[in-house]
Length: 70
Figure 1 (cartoon, rainbow, N blue to C red):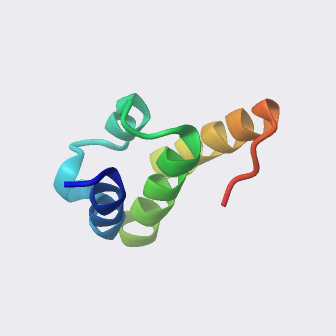
Figure 2 (figure 1 turned 120 degrees about the vertical axis):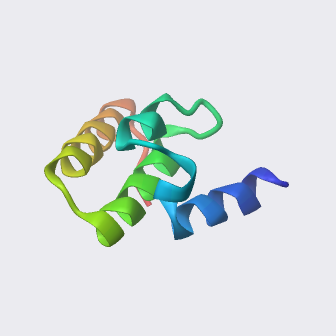
C-alpha cells in the first residue's frame, strides 16, 4: 500500500488504525501537517478535548517551523 493510500484510508476512519489520538503524534510515517489532517478527521467523527489539544499543538509546531497547515 502506498503512503498516500494509507493516509487516505486513515483519514476516513482514524480510530480503525490508532487506539488513541496520541498514537497519531507518535506515528513517524507522517509529518506534522499530515498528522494534523488525521486528527482533524478524527475530531469530526469523534470530537473531544484531547484531540482539540493535539490539533493546537501541531498547529503551533507548524506555525513555528514556518510551514502552512493545509
